[in-house]
Image 1 (cartoon, rainbow, N blue to C red):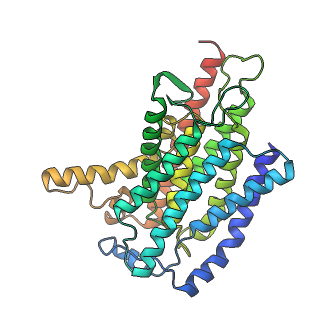
Image 2 (cartoon, one colour):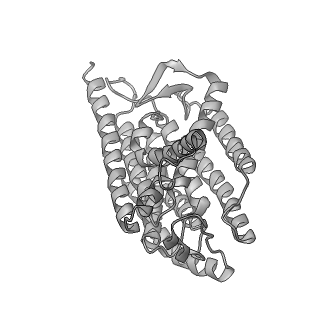
Image 3 (cartoon, one colour):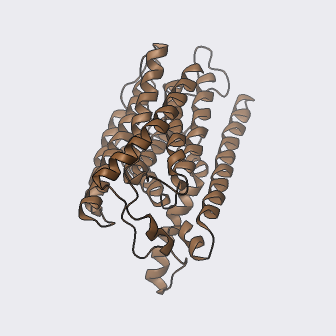
Length: 356
């Protein structure tokens, strides 16, 4: 448990202390955010606010994780390193997207094809490697089975099917977090709650792992403690970044942060065997992505808009809600989704441990 606290606290400190330096550096370089012309008028005042702040989250994540291992002397594991690879690679795709936006001074960076290729290559490498590196109990970081709280063995994808499924999961969550990142602190605060939930889930799996006697309700998961370290470091990084990103934001995470965080929570769901449970835990991200999809479908079929503007948070802004009101209420919804997901996770363990 000490290693989890070390990872979180180190990442929190690094993120809080590093972000103001990035704000000044990016401001000197002219790395300012471009704002959608069709967005709420109040957002035009944010034009020029330094972006690419996701760099601070990534750096604090890595430092928090590495320092924790240096202090404990425990070896790094395949599961954690694969999730870190996924997070960093998608962060690199997002960084390139942000950089193009800045250089061309527009709100469009990589085209859809380029971003798709970046996500596809990253997800394919992760998916292939995640089914390797079996430990002494023949457990690999990921499983080819669909999972809710643990593997649903009757729903197996096979190797190729799992790689395709992994791409869908990773692309969906990275884009969902990206769409949510439209208000000051909304994505960072929501992601911190999701990551805190995964700290608890992974640590609980570690405390109830199937070892020698295979007690009822135990978890067949590889490296749960190290996965908890990754989630804790990322949570600390998000909270530290939120100190500077909360309204009125002095820096935005940009696609660098949103794509990385989306890939991170997707990777955590895969290695903890909770892909379907994440739909509940990350309910705010799901609603934001669905609002965009529904807006497109309804407009193309009827010629009318379902919402005043998508993603969903802008609908409430255009309805007259203050930005901070929207943010706080969405945070409350995120907390409720995380609590509900954690409750489902624990209730499943109670049922399984009772042998029912």
